Length: 226
Length: 84
Image 1 (cartoon, rainbow over the protein chains, first blue to last red):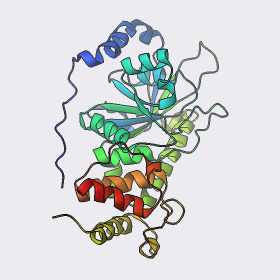
Image 2 (cartoon, chains in turn purple, green; image 1 turned 180 degrees about the vertical axis):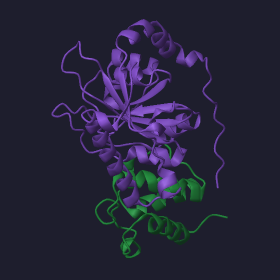
Image 3 (cartoon, one colour; image 1 turned 90 degrees about the horizontal axis):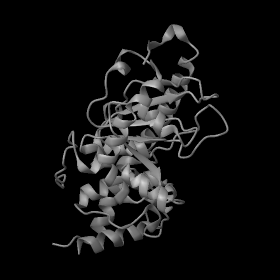
């Protein structure tokens, strides 16, 4: 068995994260104004996310990464984005500064998968939109792709589902519903079968729909403003 | 000592058998079997299989993507080249 290569743990301060941290700090007053209303699935979901984790969210617009950064403001996010976005000079420049990880959705490379796993093993938060594209047609999240399950199996990081209610008006407050962390390896063991990988992706999609329904069921939810 | 082609194929079959739910997967694993159409592997299945191959053979799949391999033989050739 090959030994895992030595990984550098993500420190509190790092020049690589300068732009990301600078924006987070300078945007703090704005974040107070735009702070989302948090709804939690249960008590387990209320716990602060520590260490490596994969955060997944429904994808309704290009501004979704900002909403997710507002919802989980206390952690740096390494977003997985489609490689096409990196093609333009300006877009690629900013996405690299924000330390996004490009992935070719049609033809994923093994090196990209390894890069994401390494980022997780360093203790980072990797955020992604498992629908694979912006879902403009409906509030209902489309079926999830199962690549996130592989990343979770390889790194051991739990997956945290988040649902953010699409805003109809600019003055509406953002509502973020945070789900309970889901560990693929705890449920299926370290070597799940192909069918279990698909099953885990379907489970998380169903969970996302459940989080969406919680917005309309005040009796079942744990709320926290700000 | 370099691993023989048959040994590589056997180990690959073991990997597929342990991950697949198809009991007939071993019968389908001929050298010319197409990964997607004959063995029914999706891109995620292939990524997952590669993780297991890397661990089993102690090699790394660099500069290749899921579409780099069409048949079972392509995978054996790649592993053979890496082990040489």
